Length: 312
Image (cartoon, rainbow, N blue to C red; front, side):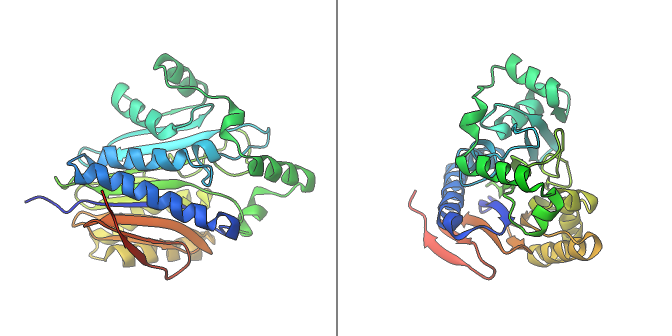
């Protein structure tokens, strides 16, 4: 029996300012619609999550690809992951530079190498070898990101204090199940403003920033990377589902555990093997959207659940 295809996307859990609110909502709606059109036409969940995340990477409202922030040296370092729940194939990349769509590069690593993750110089060299399109740093960075970085240099704020104000941008991601019942996930990030050079957050870490397994479901997370890694948040949600919890309860319990155990806030999207899904967060806002049965559901503030029809 064919499954009902579902895709859910997020644009990062943080204190999204009002001037970015509308753009964030439009961005996740566009990404979910694009991913759903692939699923509705018989495409795979892997294709759908990659395409959805690429849309978000190309949108400067989000901290990934074209909306990336600057590290302590004023440079851009990008991380991404993609995972196929059918066979647990995974490709991840960290600390890469001058690549507009890290999620596409992560899939190249998954399909063209015997490895699961590449980082730093080796990853950048491999990107050149594979003719992955390179673009200048200045094309990846917005004026806002430069101003933010200059302010942090001036006031010497620490990364911890920045996250405690929930003002830092964050990750984008997608999870999907296709008509064959195959499940996939993808996550991509530009990191934290003023982070140490070489810092890697949760996004490309298997089981923390994302995880997909056809036997359970798929998760993409967002929030304070160090906290998410400590509790392996993505895998924890699926563990809760394995215990019999609904996706929403599994997500809420995992986020609550992270908040209580390591004082970390964040958000996540999850889809189960039966096509049930949830988008949950403990920050002020998280832009998210889902698409199923030609209906788009989306929100930004806690408790929001707007719906509109998709015309494909």
